[in-house]
Length: 377
Image (cartoon, rainbow, N blue to C red; front, side):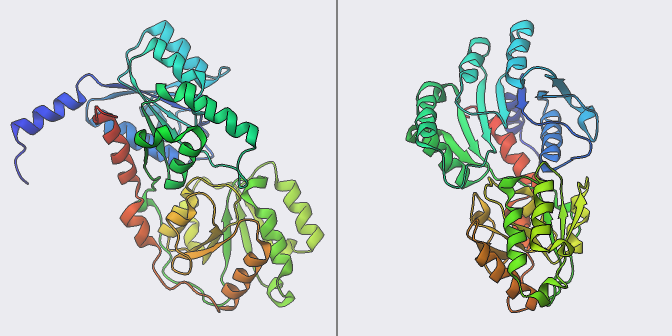
């Protein structure tokens, strides 16, 4: 190992000296739902601590599950996270060098109000998907006005995909091009077990998704109902997840007489250990930003059949590591399912490679940490 020069040490010390960060996340801490973002929060905090940077975390609630007991967490409880943070700053007069937001609505008066209490640089991370048919004209006008009024108080916009960055610019104005950048989500590769074989004929499928209308599982049910009866007799699709739309999905399965094709598996706290039991993941979503479940499935060497929304096509190549169909196109989905099930369409590649090369959690953490070291961020 090469010796570290005194100049390098001095530069590192200057970059990290007296930095204190606030991270605001409109993200419920739930012990029975530990996902990719939880691991990111834990690893980012470790990276900061290892470099002498203190992080205060502001969530809707407090919890000590997983590694949250090592974080400095403030729960807003009965207040919105934004309002709680403003009250906290007013009361404690804490000086932050950086204020980072996750899952917080962009370009609202909140960002103006932060500047009344802090000179810290504000970095807004956008994880939010957009409607498949875009916003109404009224909503688009409102967003553009908000962009004119409040984007000046945000120093950097970060999208979790190129799609997201483009949507930020479309929503709030072209003047944001120079202060927007992409940092892709990532996953912990070491924790994801790898499938070593793939059934060419009669593969099995999983869906890993919150059960709500925008996830498009109702389209999948209809597509299965269109399959030849010979396939319907044997095809198996396991649904992992829960949500308010479950009763609607159950009723739709009954209407199409395909209940026997599906099994509700409920929420799983450790989906990473489940992917390798399947040949393909199905994600017929109508809205997506950049899906962690797609990355986890690919990392398990399980190809993905999904729609052309959000950042899906930034990680998936049709016919190479999965199949892409137009959102809500039930007949195209049916055709893909039939070809894949009969072995007429197959994925031969090791789908883990693309995740290893570009979408690891470590890379995501390093790129977010670099924002804190960059005094121009």
